[in-house]
Structures are given as C-alpha cells and as structure tokens.
Image 1 (cartoon, rainbow, N blue to C red):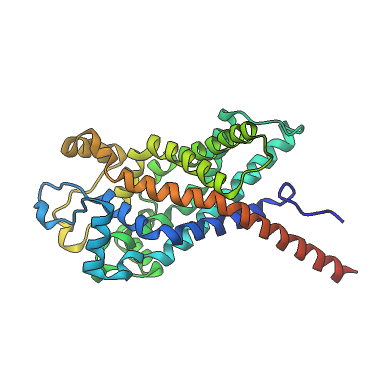
Image 2: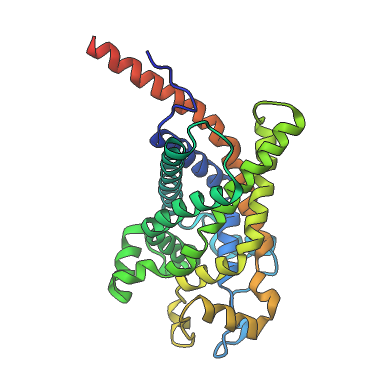
Length: 318
C-alpha cells in the first residue's frame, strides 16, 4: 500500500492545506486588512474638501474611528466574502502552483534538483496569472464591502448584482491589468521563501523549519515582495473602489493603473505611491508568515486525511 506523505500529496491536497492556512491567517489580522484598504483608497479629490473625506493618520487612528462610527462589527465588514475569496484564491493558487511545479519536475527535473530563482519566479507567476483571471471578481466585491458606508453595504450576492447592473459584467474585473502585473508578488514571495529557507536549513544544519522559523522566513520574503510591488497594489485597490453616493458625482473616475499613479504623484508626490504601506506590510507579513507557519501544520492534517480516505476506500473495495 502506497504511503501518503507531503511529497506524494496531490495538488488538491496542497491547495486544501494552503487555503485553510490562509483563512486562519486572515481571520486573525482582518481588522488590519480593513484599515489598509481604506487608507489605500483615501485620495485628494479636487471637488471635495479634505475635511469631508475620511482620513486615517495611522492604523490605530483608523481602528478607533471605525469603532466610534460603526462599532466592533465595522472592523469585520465583508469578512465573509473576504474569507471565501481568500480560500478560493489560495486554493486556486496552490493547486495551480503545485500542478505546474509537479509537471515541470516530472518532465525536466526528474532528479529533484533545486530550481533556480528565475524558474521559481516563472512558475509562481504562471500560477498567479491563472489564479487572478478566476478570482478578480471576489477581490472587487471584497473591496466594495470594505470601503462603502454601512448604508450602502450589501452581502456578496447583492454586491455582485449591483456591480453587474451598474457597470456590466466587465465591472467584476476592474483592476485586472494591475492584478496580472501583481502576479509577480506571490512569485517573489514564494521564490524568496524557498531560497531563504534553503539558506537557513543549510546554515543551521537542519532538515526542516520549525513553525517559528517558518514565520520569520515567511515574514522576510513577504516584506520584500510588498515593498517591490506596493504602488501597483494601491492602484489596483483604487480601480476596484467605488465612491459613496454622496461623493459619486464629485469624483473623477480612474482610467487605469497609470492614471492612478500619475494623479497620486501629482497630488501627494512620490511617497503618495506608498501611502498605507506600513499597514499593508504589517498585515501582509503577519498573514503570509502565519500562512507559511500554519500551512505545514494543515498539510500534516491533510496528509492524515488523505491516508484515512485511502485506507477507507481500500477496505470498501476488499
């Protein structure tokens, strides 16, 4: 009887473990996700007085303002669709990444040698592009739920219907171009993680990372990826954002990612491209590090689950 192990776990198993770990991580850091999204869409609009616009001086200031205006539930606005989106996105990504990586190793790397950084990036980007094409609508819905005022906030299904009614089906794919460019973000993250992991394992003369080391290596790799890609992260969120009804007629719609970047550069200067980056990094690093740490744990449980299912099937056949 074949033994189920991490190495023999099929892409579906890796996807299941990855999405479970991502959902767990998001649930822990979700208030930071709300804050970073709202900071990213805060812009200087010519037809609107700054005092009439929501403005957070810091993550803590944002949390206090939301608690004051919306209560504790405001910090978890859109959590349901966000968890669904995270599970869907990570399941799709891990499935595609594991499938593509396994296919490459089967054809061109039968000896199991270490892949180059460039190849890791290419495989990660390919998996990310496939994932983005499928999951962008969930990202658009989540952004709307996180940024619209309570009076205009709807559930996942109604938000989808509203977008299609007002903007057409293509409205569900707002920000798709910068999203595709941002496929290099997870690619950089995972490639960096693999390289840093190999360095740590070799330096410490160990065969596997402890949960604590996985956390640190994950944090470092995600920080690197976020700093490199942040301007486009901000541009993507603004393209997916929708102004509230009282601001709609006074806000000039963005034409694309380059339009976002040029207008931000004009009103806020170069550092405007990095507005909210500290909150983004804190949230991204914590969630990614937790994901890397918890994925190993969830992978172990998934291996046990697959072994149990396989044993049960064999008993039924016998």
